[in-house]
Picture (cartoon, helix red, strand yellow):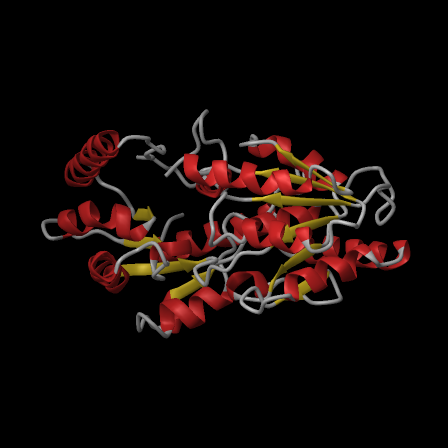
Length: 357
């Protein structure tokens, strides 16, 4: 999956990884798909993609085959491997390996079979976080630890995501930001529900992200509850990745209320931190690998009613100096995930595994 004009955020980290590997002198030929609307468009897109992948592998020589979205893209690679010896690098992330609520047991059974075969055949497996490596790839799929390399989804481009000239912790009227898909499991509706319980508080909320038609209609209905309150909510739809920094910079806090145990890293939280914006986030999965409660943000249990409301209240009542401390520590955290460092290390590992000069 790859970004497009209609879905600029979709698979953006894959573009960032591929661009970064090229900068580190790894020659790449890409075969990608973009998000499609209708079922027939999806079927035709997958069919064309699968045939092209098989044709390329069978007719050309590659040092290695780098696969994202294993359960979706692994089948043609596995098929080609029956006839030709290939070195596979599998970059697993998100709902690839973890069953999500919307996925039936039967569908996940098939996905897991493809995942397992591909992971077993892979020379190297790339995981976005230590959580995803240990709890998912190693524990649930039995992959040897030595075979798994942690590389956080291309990292954060500090030339793009950086703090503004506004003094941290003193950004005027309290402002909260949500960036992510408009879905139940991403927690955006829990966020609005928690806000409704404290709508006497004075704050501005910006929501960015795409969603299915029925989800967007639900979002608009929920927003109406704030029309006569002190909370102002603005929905911006999808926003280009390079336009996100100004939203992060203007916000006092980034709210990351995901309930997904398939949240393999949560790169948006790190992008917010790189802009000096602390995170109010779920203490689960990959998010917990960088979010430290009271240090660079506030953590809460998304499955415990009332905890998000409590965290929002706590943040909005912080003094400016305390918000500034969180902001400074958020910046320090993000520095560990700079894209230059992350992609250089990943490129070195790939060259080592594939014996590239």
